[in-house]
Length: 83
Image (tube, rainbow, N blue to C red):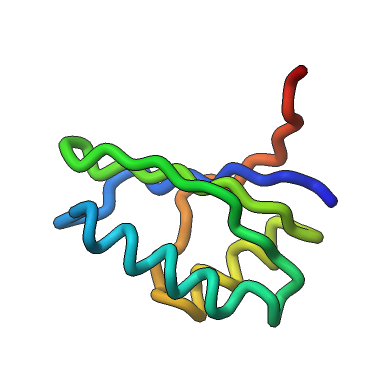
């Protein structure tokens, strides 16, 4: 299944607790769309968040975020894992 990295450029008021809760909500919804969110990274100072997911399409990955918490990514890029 394709891998996608989504990027949120500036999440206002980003905290560790908030991003953990958003990720938890993604995990609750992901199966409905055939998506599996694998990892996430964030920077509280800039409000940037990066999420890595296996998904059948960009649209499916986006649908999970939209339903789970409404924080749509600014970019979604298909990526391939290096060796």
